[in-house]
Image (cartoon, rainbow, N blue to C red; front, side, top):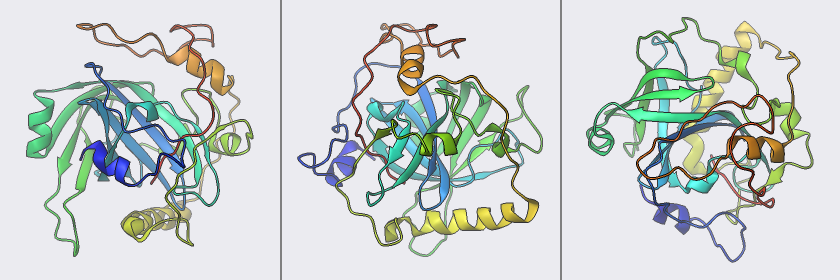
Length: 282
């Protein structure tokens, strides 16, 4: 998918979302954004070919090889979506809270474009929460009405495997150390507005597959009980966190490395925080 689809869905005369711009350079970054929209899900994005190749993962990624996570490929996103964290206002498409759940760099285990074309993309992640070897495998779906966008996100066996991985234990932002509830309650969080109107339920029919998958995950989760994440964490405000994480553009021929700073003053050259208003979607 190209940015034409992203552009087609938006009227940039009425929405402050970032334009459909393909970036130059060969940086290899990834980001996982936890998104509490109509239903909770995770957006897994790989920076390649000047855009963010994106998949919606209802249950989120796992470090347990036994967990084969459904990952529905969605339209490419501009690289400017990489570090968005905040709230999409009620009444807009994808309304809800967005957290930068994990971020870092990735390394393809072969020719990335060719592996993706063949439907077997192998790569290594070097993030704060996700590390080691993974694969995105394209499914030959028999689901009625399928558009062939179903993939599986699978963890390979290596030193970073965690049997029985519980994603709920990691409900904090790698940027600001805030929980989803804290981000939702912060009136100062960036807001992105979409020109695409939401349906009465807050999602379009096009996303019914996602709501159904997440609903099943929620039902299963309710049986075992939800664990509370109440541990105290050091906090940085969004502006400080972004300055700490976003360093100068990577120079040609050098791989960019992402490291978790000890404080808001560590790592990266300070950059002006972006003015509020950008949009994401399910």
